[in-house]
Length: 599
Image (tube, rainbow, N blue to C red; front, top):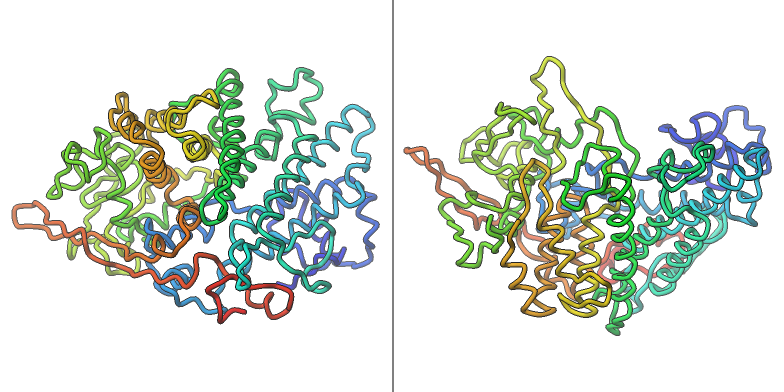
């Protein structure tokens, strides 16, 4: 796609032809009559608003892409069935420059940054008159100004997370910071700013956004009913003040982590904990009172108004993309991905103890019995049943033994003999006369992530049971371990293992948090970045991953070999590459270490 950000014809294609908020066409195609100028956009308030609104459409809407479950295929949680998939080739160290799966995100992020920079330039967006009524006009312009800063922070954070790393010059580098509406494709030869500079810019934009935005888009926070046409719950799904605090918490968490904190600056952990705690307090003290948030309630992946959401993508209605890719061919799926044995083994037993602890009562002969209820809500194992929601009707039984209909081998079955249940709507059966499809979205930030962020940061700053924040890392993890599971299972009502591991100190509790983070956020596209930030070497990334090899015996029992290597990982670098064509075009760019053939 030709990157013509500076061409005003592109803007009019977005805002006039496709519509401001729901465009699904190539917005870079020229506007048919081609007679508009750059200044014309400021004559139409809908177009000015569209500079901000279009950015939301640039965000992913599900987990079935290279920013979701496929990204977990670059980790020890998932194996991608297709060995020619770009992420698969990345994981085994065979990614050619022609298949870069991240190139599109570099372009997307800078396109979006261009749009909000155009809005922010000389405060022209803010100074646009949107409504005749001065008070209502101020509500609109303040919200849009705040959203513009927040969106710039968001897309900059995406650039930093994906492309930040140690350059071949030995420096920790981020991305080229661009604060003007310029065409980075045709007019520039940019250099990457330092990692620290990028963090500071993102934080500054979050703080700027916070000054303009309401704390949260909730009707109950807008006492004047007449204002709710331009404020409140109708803007659910857009950036608000509390979301900017969540972004700061995530940015600080990564900045505090070993790979990006060579000086071990402990104050970074403190900043991550403080911001995450502010978000948690809002959910527990404000949303829990009026908006229906409940710390014990299971995550509902199909509810656009789920109370645990902090920031979510726009919903795609009547969608079955996740079910198709997760189910095997025998149940009309494509078996595109499968969970690893490593992930299965990470789930504890129903008494809360890890399977490596004798007190867990784990039986390797019957490896799927008496496991943590979260396991059954997350992964379909051999002989598991897909039971239709709110019934006892079995829609499908998984046969993953050798020569079974769902066994590894065919291109429509997982390579690991595990299939994924998380985020699957259990009311969907393609054999029904009336197929029940549910909306799907990507929860960019939600309750569990803030609990995990706070717990990790607070533990690093003051240990498992410190009281500085009015909530300990142990308390935050207890919230997660007690909450209900997505398929109706209950959390831990008693949790002796949590108490025990908290008493062992910071290092042991850090390992515990990492494992809980793995379980809670699997298949969401986060683990690659977690594994990278937690270490300063490639060991955690370059490990073989395993499958289950299953034999069905004559008496109907099964023999399990759970130590079968399915893929060997071979990353040349802990960092993702700067797009190759950008390296060729901009001589000032420094490539990340390990990507010698891409410089």
